[in-house]
Image 1 (cartoon, rainbow, N blue to C red):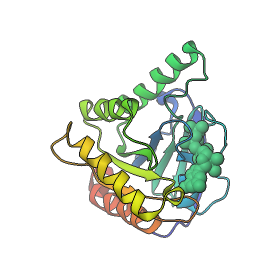
Image 2 (tube, rainbow, N blue to C red):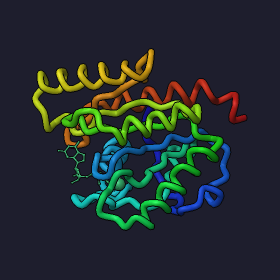
Image 3 (cartoon, helix red, strand yellow):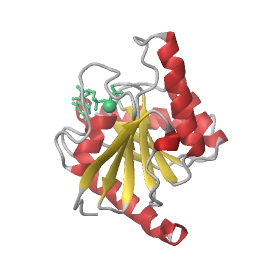
Length: 203
Ligand code: GTP
Ligand code: MG
């Protein structure tokens, strides 16, 4: 897929106020600082489309971007960020959960996992939440440039083995690096394929 346009549409904390256009939507979620915003910029080949920060908790709202005037890409706040107040965390959780439950045009969610980390409870619980609500998702391993290729393979094999303790089949997964562009073509082709598959449902 060629990216012809990538336009920021709006930020908000209420899914009911999200754009109404009936086009397929893809959401990016994961722990705070996992590299969601960086991945979005890498995929879109734009430096500052999504806001990036070395400090966790940068993205705090539901951010809609319109891509090629054909689909929405959504940058969501990270979960599991310990530094925010309990009250704020509850509000976050509420609007993120609501987003997933209410957003009808959502066709696929990308759950980002730092490829250096072993499986974490919070990610596994989040994937279980998606499954329970019948929301299709893929796993995207990020920051691949931070590990050597043999270490990466060991990590990912171990991660998948752990997932098989909970699920009979593994979700589609991607290995990416926003620093090197690894995984970009494969990722965009995947979205292109889904867009074509669901086109008839969005007429
Ligand atoms: P929040 O919005 O705070 O939840 O974070 P986020 O998941 O959007 O992460 P963000 O893209 O802001 O990146 C967090 C930090 O990781 C930044 O310092 C990025 O430069 C760095 N980073 C992200 N992706 C990569 C990558 O593929 N490779 C390397 N080396 N660093 C990365
Ligand atoms: Mg972010």
